[in-house]
Image (cartoon, rainbow, N blue to C red; front, side, top):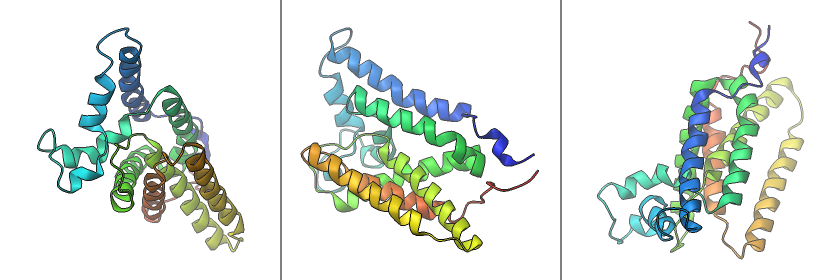
Amino acid sequence: MTALAGRGRIPGAVWAIFALSVLPELVLLGADFGLWGRPWWRSVAYEYAGFWVGLLGNWRPNYPLQPVLMFASYGFLHAGLWHLAINMTTLLALTPPLVARIGTGRFLALYGVSVLGGAFGFAALSRASAPMVGASGALFGLVGAFMSLDFRQRIAGGRPVGPLAGTAAALVLGNALIWWMTGGRLAWETHLGGFLAGWVAALALPDHETDDA
């Protein structure tokens, strides 16, 4: 039986990531609509857990570890229901085939590396004064890992890598279009950092796509 038999499974740990992303947004949405709490809850959440480039400079943090913790915490906040829905749908779509190829533990490590990669990309390339939030850096890392594994398979099998160039071009054009449509409010730096982190991390991962058991 091949390793592909587990392709439809979403591990409990990934559902935990899902819950840690969904619950904060649900709480903040309820506060936005006055169902509980206060309308300023969202701004406070972004202030304390979003990624602020200025905190890597001369800005004063709200608490001592904020400049460090924000490298992870930003990935569990979102900028509204549609932002959350798109990211979580993408997470659930990418998880089963990638877990089948690299295993649950490595998937979680890859997700963590991609979150950090997205943060480092934003830190290195952005000069934004607004906070950055969202799981898309991690998700671009998963896409980068997929493409890296595919690239490795194609090279080993002597197959052309042209289709991957087309996929990369589509990602770039898609980001450019969304950046234009949102008036420059797309954190493309995070997407790039996550993608590169996922690609590089996947170079060290075993690929069980064609393994027999």
